Amino acid sequence: MVHGPPHPPPSKDTHQECWHIFYSDVHVGIITERASDPHDVDQWGWDCGFYPVTHGREHADETAVNFEQARADFEAAWANDLPKCTSDDFEEYRRQRAWTARKYAMHDTGTKMPTSLPSGRSPLPSILPGPADTFTRRT
Image (cartoon, rainbow, N blue to C red; front, side, top):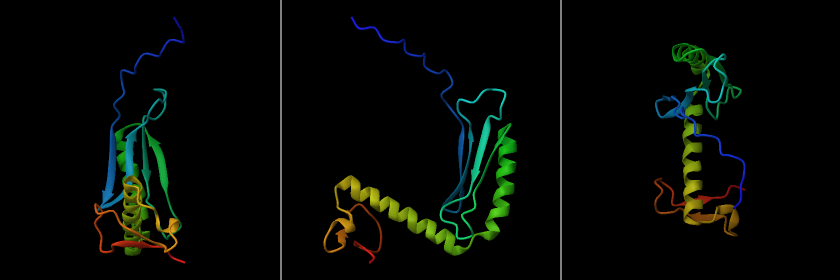
């Protein structure tokens, strides 16, 4: 019989609250309970910002004692950040999100990336929405 170190007991508090924050269809932040922190430190955290942002890739994050404070702090950060965002920032986010979804769908279906083929073109998996039926490598 093989004996190893005892397994730690399962955590009784594995649930954490987490709020994803969207501006229209763009994910701009998160407010969440912090995991594994001592009880004498802030139990909530927030993160504000999104990729890409042409105004210097601004990003803010902090901790807070409770959800209400985290929300108020997030709202203040977003009120500061939003006026610096352009419609191009939101469109670039959407393009990047679509590209990432297509890239993972290609991987999941075994479709080669355009850069892996001599032609530089690769058919999109049929499960993908979009106006184009191929990806083209930019040179």
